[in-house]
Amino acid sequence: MKVNMARYEAASSASVDFLDRNREPPLHPTNNRTISSPQFALSLRKGSLTMFSRSVLRSFASDLRFAAPSSISAAPFPQRACLHQTAWLRTTQTQSHSAIPDTPLGAIPRVQDTQPSTPTSTPNTTTPQTDADFPNAKKPVAPSFDAPIEVTKSLMSTLPHLVGQSPHYVVAELHARPFLLTEGDHLRLPFLMPNVKPGDVLRFNRASAVGSRDFTLKGSPHVDERLFECRVRVTGTESEPLRIKEKTKRRQRHTKTAKSKHRYTIMRVMEVRVKTPEELLEEGAVVVEDTEDTPKVEARS
Amino acid sequence: MFPGSFPVGVRKPCKWVNLKNTSITTMPVKAIKTISSARNGVGAFILQCKRLDFHYCNFGGSSRGMLSFLTKDLAAFAREHPQIEIRVSPRPAKHPVIKGHYINGHEKAICVRNLEPSEIMKKTNILKEANGEKLKRTKKPVTSLNESVRGIWSPYHGDLRGV
Image (cartoon, rainbow over all chains, first blue to last red; front, side, top):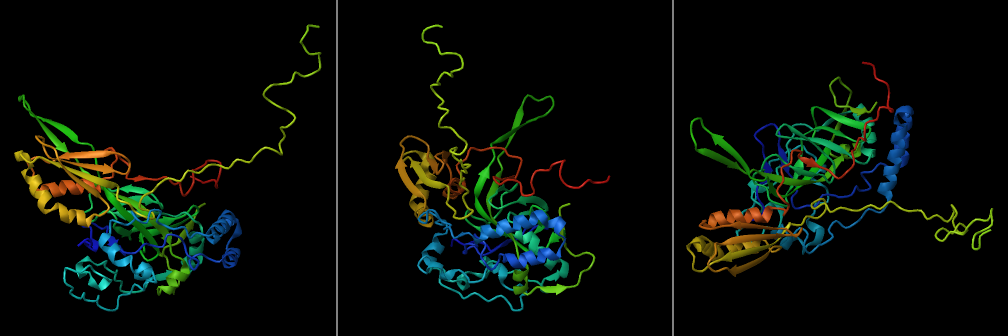
């Protein structure tokens, strides 16, 4: 079958979640995510105006940008686009977009209170129609958390500033290596990632910082993965030119040559975004009082 | 006064610049051209390999594995990848070769002489997943077309910092 493993669990501290391979993620911010400008202006008036004067302008500019029609079709060549997922194409194109869940996977309340549904055994001859048809080992693993995310009041009040500034970056960590990513970046991993195919969508869930031009949300050591979304698409593998190392021993005419040609996974960053406080509350975030070691959005001095 | 010359104080009409018509108001406003660059995979994703050519020899012993690959495994591979055009053609008295053709116009060829069908499948997958670019040694993992999110540091802006 075309669909392979569901989760790539790295041996080290980094882990990548396989999420929603069959779903195009929302490419453009929808209206419910953007902050309506009067509300935003109000929250800014409460804050110190001197510090945010530049960000006010910028956030209004970004609001205007969001207000502009942004429903550009994502697929310029529908006949060639997404053909890599042929099995999926055959099943879902007939149903048009009904297979796309109405809520993104990130927006599902993350507290897993039930056991994952057991897959129904289907004969191999049919192509899988729904999510339930995939074997359990190949499904994206819903992250299980013991408790809903706790967000402090100060974070809730400062998060709109970060969300409102449009281009975001994320310092995603993979195998304890940081990669500073923005949307549309090309990423060549320093290794060949097993069990991925071109076209797969991964979600990087470990980040040490998420930020925009003036604001940064730093993690200690990591930002909670429910605060942001960073998706990448595997576009293939690349290899380096052949390396030839000459190995010599003393008093021997013979020279041994050691050859190596490593292969690397190449990816494209599809999406980097920070969730709004409203989204967090929808997902069941709990607002708590401030403590010492809670994440804060830091403004640039 | 020489014949043909102009009297002092009268400006010689210039051939190229007509001063009458130039003024600031009529100067056209030029927009800065933005060239959109293709970033495969951000929205839609298109596999870069568009064609695979399989060359074999009916007589040669080095094509034995290739022949069994063509008869047994290639049909399934082609069915799984309808976006890749597959051509099979004989190349008598030569070693078997797989050639990949890519969207960027490049071509990659792998010689598969004396290889088993399973090994040939691996080579085929290498060609399928490649992007057709020339092999390069890069040290930076991330290449970005976006301008820096946080801007370029300037010594003239921002607060003074005590050491």
